[in-house]
Image (cartoon, rainbow, N blue to C red):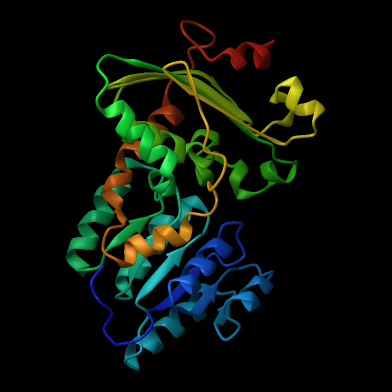
Length: 321
């Protein structure tokens, strides 16, 4: 990222301040020594701002937020970066707003829903001279970095199984997350980080088969350059293995690579500050690096459903029965 136009802390604005992920961005802005000057969300349940930036201006209407950001620019105290935590389908528009405002954009996953949106935004980034960064925090996890180094030198195809169940209540289906056109569906909304991780470790997608695709779960087989991946994703607590249900657990994550269990539960949620430091040092992940995962989830969303044929994840049979 180029240096700020003035000395001192960078000035941030944040779109989507009431969202689940927004506090991690506020924390990252604060811990990197910068300041939040403005925030936007149509919902006003944003008291968390007091824990980080109580002096930040807050808006529930985009038009007033837009006017404030423009006023700062005209006064010579423009916003340097805009962090975007809005619903998935709005990311493209909000990134464009950031660039038009003369700010760099830092956007949550998935950065966009469709591969062609990546092309358009890369062109706009070049025209504006501003950067677009995304949060791919798994690439910064020490355990994932070690896995990439470990499998980089291996010949042949690695067999991978991945299951991720993160239980959600009835509210999920009534929110934007339950609308495929807005969230991208289960594979996009809760799986895009894992697909990015897999392509980062094992290379580009060669073939994708979808065995199951519902509102609450999805599963399939990915064939990458150096791996075959059987994957299963769900937000339904009834899909949890019996042992987890008996313990009252709401989340289940199981990954094996080459028959070996992969564990990275610790530190999974604490990497936003690390991501911000990397971005501010000029080493962050730009939008083009998210392309592979965006292509994967787009293909999954639009592929025909093969049903339980061929090589599918074991949890598929339990769900279908």
